[in-house]
Image 1 (cartoon, rainbow, N blue to C red):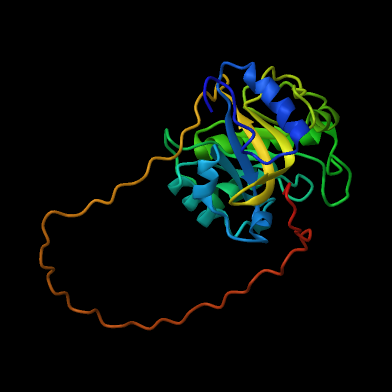
Image 2 (cartoon, helix red, strand yellow):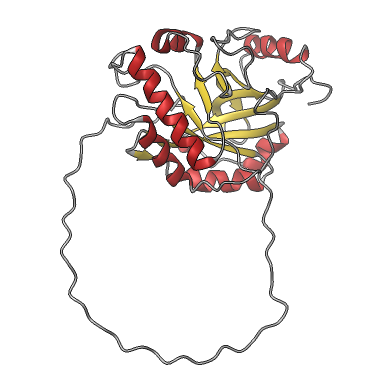
Length: 290
């Protein structure tokens, strides 16, 4: 990418969507960056080759870490590590299920699963808010007031635990239907999903998107089918940097350790612990969007 023009030719998306996305990006002076978002679905086929993705202009990746409070992506940690080693910025995202667990609990579960480390180089957590995939209605059987309260709980707990404003992923239609375009979260960065358009519809109260998922049927060497995204700087989220690589510190001098006597083993009677009865959670299915 150079001069604010994104090189979408190397990103294997449908020609019409690619051309329309480039039309918008070419008019921007903010130099949008190419990226993608993935889940365990991308591990159904061949292993992901992060080095190849980096060579195809991919600069960031959002990786699903959890869903609700009952599912953790088993590939999250290895994907995050390998993507960072390839020079990509990594964002953990949560697939929300407001009908099953509270917003604060969902945020806490995700932060723990991601082993999130606070700091200036850490990127924020993203929350995926879209139609209920389990068939209980678009808004998870929650009214507008309860849905707004759920989002507020997630945002507040995520900010407290990470020190960053979470990113809200949604569509214009879902946001209007399920929150009535509430203005409570205007300071949180927006990740909008919109396809087959050269100018995504930005839901109120936002004026600009920080991320735009412009294709759900992209194809890239090194990963295959995946969602494709852009990032552009906005107020409150003006940079997207990969995490700095840690340097191994080797001690200059090696000292001989003193011998310590082994303590005598003490045997204690262990208390019996009863495992709680498992709750019934929705059956998790692998989809490219989740």
